[in-house]
Image (cartoon, rainbow, N blue to C red; front, top):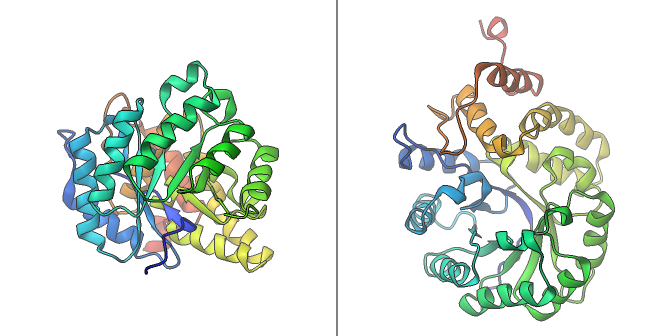
Length: 314
């Protein structure tokens, strides 16, 4: 019997290219998948999440994204599929579709109504519906508590206890003490729940706490650097980790500046500057970035050694 997939290691969340008419640009998406999965040391990729602008994608488009990714990368790496839905019935429908179409794990976003307040019973009911619809391992997306969509410690422990297919959390708590509690508490359970950092703005600091993985949209641009950083930390090679982090820092600073909603917009522009995408098209309500910000992205790529200056290239 095959060993169940356990989400861990370096998991880039890929972008979704669009054509000028805002339709999915499938050839560009296929190329992007090949580029990201070619990076050494990654363990999976994530689709139909924040980075693929899932909020603007229909159910049928999400299925097409999954089928395209499965066709393009085959069994080379597992596919983590986002479950973005405000209602539990729709979340279960997405989970069933992802399971039938070849996903390896589910990344479950918190329902938007939780911004108005949640109870442990509500969270348990939501995840129970999804677990009943699919036997795939579940990654709980842990939002900051201040949003109302983050799960308090007691709720999170109850979820891990009562939903056995929960095998990881994507930690976006934004709080160092809470993040360390997640690492120490969840990963030491009798049935461990891995902590996958998404604190990409301070990734080195996060990883040294002992996260068993990372799941990040900026992995769509720098999967090789994120992989090198993760594995350097795992080897306790702090000097090498700091050297790699010095290259990541300029990009983290520009990608994760305000407004955060533009983080993946900026990543698309970075890929255009690197020659990996032909265009950086986003769906409304996101809008095209203007030249001053694109200039800051170009400068960050230069500082990180990803882009050569014209004088150097001559």
